[in-house]
Image: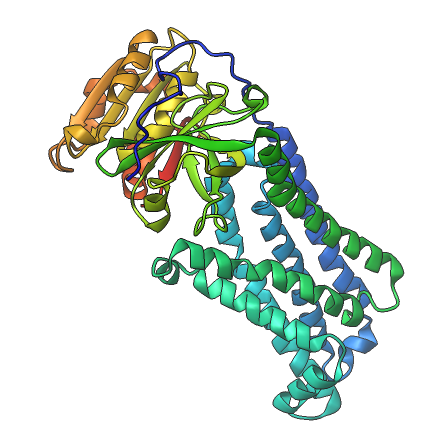
Length: 460
């Protein structure tokens, strides 16, 4: 591991900073967007229904072809919505957070893929019945003789591959980088299937208005994805021109990276948020990974802290000073803006202390937080002194639980003893997935309402 011999970065002690914070979430805008998406789904289904006549339905293959048209339109529309969920639109992300958006993305994903498979089957059966031939023969005719059918078939295959690698049991066996690369097939599939929908869709052939509206929906989706996933990160990275200035060991297998840049006072960020970091060095430049800030910005410096749990995080610990850095974000709803009650309980395990420490720093004076840190060993309590100072300056209480999971278990009895006023506090939990799931379940058992539980899980 490289460790800088000299440091130009500031001491990361607690002090009141004038940091430009991300604005509060706006749930009303998200509700309006959901209403618009629902209306769009109804309009798409209506296109398929109103386009059919009784004579068309009663003809050989009529009902199968109608079912294929309906499932194709709805499946394609849901695929566009699925892409929009992960396009990182700021006002949506600030309300639902990346965790919430990804959960909805995963829940929705089986529907468009399943509907498009059903679409292909029903259209083939419908056309075969109309031609009074076998389904397999008709499938060959469709692919070989109908315009844009080859690209549509390839697109469906790509979507099925992307869906298969996203099954949890499969995904856990794949490196994150390979899964991410295959997952991009979804964008390619939607792009190359566009012409097929316009050219062959019964609701579009001879209907210029519906062709225009559908094209606008596709172009709007593409524009949002390009703007927020590519355009904004490029602009932000060029504006701030971040470079690594120091890498140091923070604890066993834990490294802190300090980067410097320009105009960081213009970078709006709240404690608890994360960036997608792309280190422009050999072997790392093509992939971006999420790491939380472990402190609020101190212009011209940002600080992130990483646990060595894979190839990428291990390579981060070996970064050289001067390495250029591109960023996407900040992202995450794990911030003080999510707070519903007067007080807060902050719980973290392992490397989860990074986001918690930044969130703690963003809390106002005299906020009296209760902080619980859990670690297997004393040396695993990174930022121990910084957290203690932040808690003390906010007139809070800090509890450190060190030992095995059995020795340092967080139980109902322990919470009742350490946090007797739990009913007056929001709960923020950060750490490995299993730890976070266990604490969230405990808080629900203790009747903390869902809107007062906020969590950020790190996949280790």
